[in-house]
Amino acid sequence: FQTNARAFVPFASPLTHHKISCSLKFRSLSTPGRHRLKAPFRAPALGLRMRSTFNSVDLLAGLNQAQTTAVTAPQGPMIVLAGPGSGKTRVLTHRIGFLLNQGVRSENIMAVTFTNKAANEMRKRIKAMLGIQRDSDLQIKVGTFHGLCLILLREFGEHVGLRENFLIFDAKQQEKLVEEALHDMNLDPKNFEGMRFTISRLKSEGLWPRDVEKSQTIANNADGEWRQKMLKQTGAIYAQYQALLDVNNAVDFDDLLLRMRDLLMNNDEVRMELQDRFRHLLVDEWQDTNVVQYDIVKLLAIAPPSSSSTFVVGDADQSIYGFRGADIRNVRQFIKDFEATQVLLELNYRSTAIIAASAQTLIEKNEGRVPKDAKAFKGVGHKVVVYEAEGEREEAKFVANEILRLVRTNAIPEGFKDLAVMYRTNRQSLQLEEALVRAGIPYFLVGAKKFLERREVMDVLAYLRLIANPEDNNSLFRIINVPTRGIGAKTEEKLKALASDLNVACYDIILRM
Image (cartoon, rainbow, N blue to C red; front, side, top):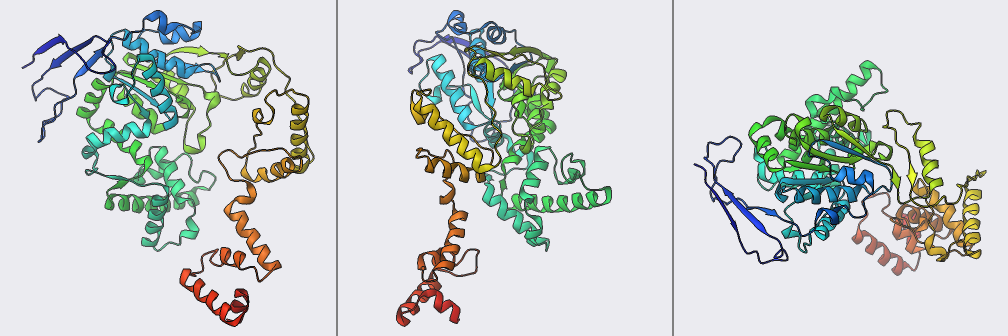
């Protein structure tokens, strides 16, 4: 049986200024693509079609021509190739608004990005655009690949062997599980450092233990026989690690993607249901997707892909997650598989013309990229200065002197707080910090401790202080169990008590033992 009911109903929430049309549909339990009923029965959420208060003029206000083309394109597969500072997140959120204005149901939209911070920002912009205050009023699914896969696996995980209330192991728990797997196989963990990252890399390639030999990244530089031996051993360790995850009713973060891909690939009923639920897919940072994430999007898209409403935004020139398995070939692969329309966002609102042109000159030498011409909205700007120093000290001294020059000549109106120094590796901060201190320049490190405050540096300094002064008990007890020697708090207390009774330094007691 099937019955339809349509009515306008009051809705007590910040959305009271919206007209809300309710459509209820009941289908026979034998209808393909629907869930069988389970006890206790939970009624599905009502599908609410929101008529937004903004109009198409408001939605397009402030967009340039290329942005407007992307936002208002007919439903179908599209890739927006967005250069740096070109407003790609704005395009994606306004595309969602355009779909809603076209009568698309909010619960039929899924928007995916890569970090929780980016997802929260996208959610914030969409709520502001729709005039919504609470997250609970936002029916559009917005989240990261991992977060959205977790939600769906909580609902459908039984189809891929996941038990109810499965756990997600963090990096430390995964490391311990790898060590346990190695001990179970009578292998020394010291000979397999980095195995957790190897397993993660295999999973990002979409490979289970039985498929390890298909890897395109593991042991590529080894000769044939040695490579086969390494892959076989890696596959065995991976299989034992995965078995231990199953024993603990747990998954790691990579499993969330792999299990979701397997679910969509092997269960037609679930795949059809999710395709019907999420008819409009929008993905940000497409250049950073890996093989598994590409497969998930392709499987969620209504077949054939060329008929789907799949909207992705990215730029192969900005791919930075290759070490995590991101594959910039997904940009061209999407164009091919989905027969996607391409829109270029080339106007950079963030940088000056010289900066944009300099970056373009470098990046255009990359192979396999989709050509774009960088254009800047701001003025010409200052020339790029290149300084080649003889060493790290000279480089750091130049940076400090240049900062002082800019501040003293008022070239930087806001002073020191408007200046930033970027470096490639943490070890480089030492010379820079020393130069800034000598020059009397105030600074703070973003996302890191100062070099001399890092644990490993303080440990080394403690050893040096103890060598210079064996009576330095503070330094002694900092490193007495570094590296681990099985010395605990009780042993330390006994040592202190004995040294006090004999009126000698703790280090002297250790030398007599």
